[in-house]
Length: 171
Image 1: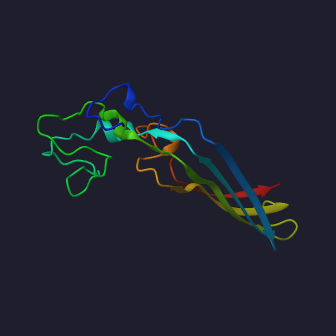
Image 2: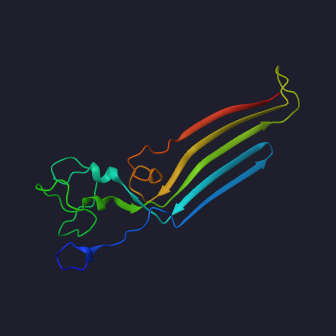
Image 3: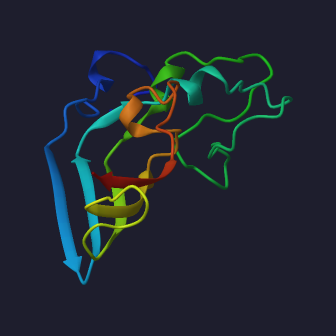
C-alpha cells in the first residue's frame, strides 16, 4: 500500500504461500512394567490458509449477528476488517480478509496400554492379553481462527476427536 488513496497494481502484496516452509513429525513409545505409552505429533509451519467460512458467512452491514471480527473504527485502526457499512455487505476485495497464518502442531494419537503378565489366562487359554485406550486427534495447537487449518479452507469438516478402547487377545 503506497498511501495514494487508490487501489491499483502498486498496492499488491504477496501474503504468503499455501505450501508450508517446513513439515515435521514426532513419534515416541515408552514401555514400563507392562504399561506402554505411545504418541505421535505432526506440525506444519509457515503457510497461509484462506478461511472462506470467515468471509462467506460474515456480512458487514452492521445489523446482523455476525462472527466476532476486529472491525476498523477511528479508535481501533486494526486494518483486518473494514468498518460496518449499510451500503456494502460484501466489500470490494473483501475476500482478502480470510487469509491468515495456518501454522499448527497436532497431536495425532496417544495410546496407553497395559499387558497382563502371565502365561495361559482365562477360559480362552490366551497367551497374552492387552487392554488399551487410544485418543485420535486429541489436541491442536494453532493461532488460526477457523475450524481446522489442515482442511485448507476452514469450510471443510474438521478432524474428529475420537477415543477408542479395546482388548487384544493372543491365542
